[in-house]
Length: 547
Image 1 (cartoon, one colour):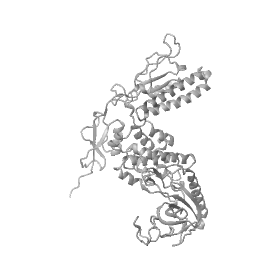
Image 2: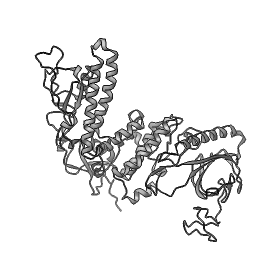
Image 3: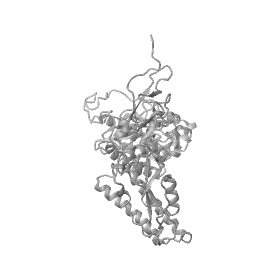
Image 4: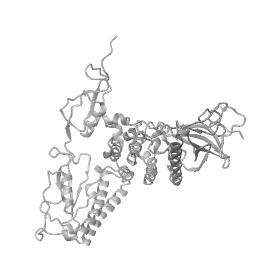
């Protein structure tokens, strides 16, 4: 049987492969293995399809199973040489110890990956062995297309309902990696593939030595997806680093473009997303993208469980889930401090039961409405979020603390104050797209409460309060954005609730540098403008050229 070295399909007497077009008269030069080399008396080596500072990946053929495979060879740049036509590598004796340590890391890492064979986003590793003074890893070969090509075939971007089932298994794979002390650290469109069965496959694995500056290996980082800390010498990297790369790749899938490089974003961390994209994505997904792509590590999403939650759960549902978690924690604390607060375990149980009942009621209602994930909070009637409750004790019989009038106060401060007393405070959901806006109350300020001032704070019976919280005025003042970058101007306006576009007309300016914002198309900085009004920005094309 005669195999094409380019794709490992049978070609008989053909020289140019009819399947892949590869010219089989070509040779593969050092430092790569020669075409047709046989490893372990089993694996026929074909063309090199990927190289980084740590290893080379070849297409291969398994003679025992009669199947196409992928073969990865440990080849750390600068630590060896291979004579032309030879299969063995020669290691620099002065660097033998470092070579051995790096090879041990390589073997240990890929050995762990064999335990993840049942995860759908992981390509199965079938064999690891030593030969030719180095180490080899054999993987299953599947017919795949690159993620970039997949995006191109889908009009340049994916809708969230298409992206979600592709990316969630990748989160599960990364979560499993980090729970065992490993990571990928090169998540990018270049390392993501789509199989013929329609699932996402994450490739491009390498040890941590290859994924940051300051190690013995020449690092391979992917612009737009590598986190800022990966460019710092010997800086510790972890799951927060992979969250950046994952979110950048998801950003690419949903927008068709990568974020700016981490080096650029250190000075300007704004994410530029078109208005049309923002409008078609669920708000909680946009929020998760922003949180996962924070330049500062301390501001970024810190684990994959939280990332999954932010991508899967609309904000109102997530808030209730957080309250349940907070309530359960408080219940444990109150049980320990029973003498200080006089609260029985039965009372604690009542609070937990009441709040837990609320979440089950919410989920039931959302299932009826067909989707928890895609139902915007503003379309959900407020009484489905927090059911009304009757006061359990009359004012005449109550001698304890009573509810204050919190209208006009900051909701977060009020929630913290009530939480310290064992009372849960919730935001009432908006019932329509115009609900919650107010010219009288700033954003985040309480406009009304479901119980009046003087209502008994009956902690022992699971009492809780809901507040209608202002979104701020329906109109806002246009900020001064002259001579700022387009990304910075868009970020400022988006934060205030405006929908922003770039004026299509080319405008030359002798004062404003090319690419910087000249100003607004129809308004001036300081104008009070309705948030429903589209805002067009004039961007400089630089000075007009003269002959």
